[in-house]
Amino acid sequence: MTKYLHYISFLIMLISCKSSTSISKEIDVSGDFTIAFGSCNKHDLPNLLWDDVEASNPDVWIWGGDIIYADTGDMVKLRNIYNAQNEITGYKSLKSKVPIIGSWDDHDYGLNDGGVEFEAKGESQQELLDFLDVSKDSPRRKQEGVYAVHDYNSPKGKVKVIVLDTRYFRTALTKDTETKKRNKPNEYGQGTVLGEIQWNWLNETLSNSKADFNVIVSSVQFLSNQHGFECWGNFPHEVDKLKTMIAASNAEGVIVLSGDRHISEFSKTKVEGLAYPLIDFTSSGLTHAYSKFSGEPNPFRVGEVVSTESFGVLEFDFDKDEVVFKMLGDGGAILGELRQSY
Image (cartoon, one colour):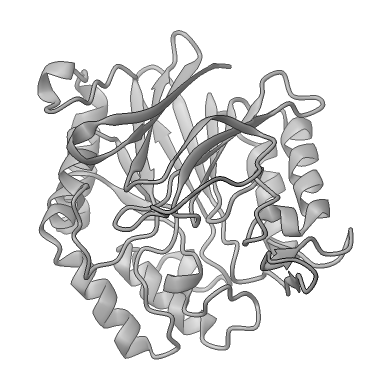
């Protein structure tokens, strides 16, 4: 019954026109389709942003990872923390009105900075799918990894959300023993983020996409690569592979969403063969942010870093082929904004 109600609610949202008169606080929604997303959330800290997320009137909420902080191979403990998050009043309200999808990062996966070596990853996958209300007979219950694709058709256009799993198959990182940074890039060609099966699935998904916009969800940053923490840049050959794949696929309006960092920022770069710039929108720190952030290099950064609690919003305008990216804070305050035509 709950899933049925979610479906009916979603249809109503797609058919009805959005109006800023229905939005409280400082949030102004003008797109034909709206995504809200975020990451790095602790159930036992004040969950202050859920009313603001709901007020942004999203058509879907996307978890970008670190839904909870469990860091455990004990499935009872993991399940209990997920259940506690489900009882947060603001989140319950959002969940009753808006479809919820997403992926995990290391702390909900179960092992800090963990990858393929985590022995309980199969069991942990089932707990995440339970939390996301994925049906017991879904093919995702039998596949290795939590990657998935979600298609949303509005009266004016189509959005495809491609949720990646950057944990289940990810091979070892290279520790940086020469500087104060945690990691350094692997030798070119060494290791993988997605693994062969997921790479093949992603290539097929992008190549066959008929959507007006294709949103790739990665729990870790794709473009920012000099901070020494986890990112695609630790596997430089995988960065090049994804850029090449996106350009060759001819998929329209590809955008990357990421989390993990406890900061929010926009990164943008030109990709050979792509008619528009590739944007990596990082939104991280729903309940706790990197408040002592004092700067770090990111050659792809556009605008300023936000180091307070925030979530991300994408407003799609199919008539203009445009997306407005927003970082929103408590009270609906707009902390950062980027506009891009496609």
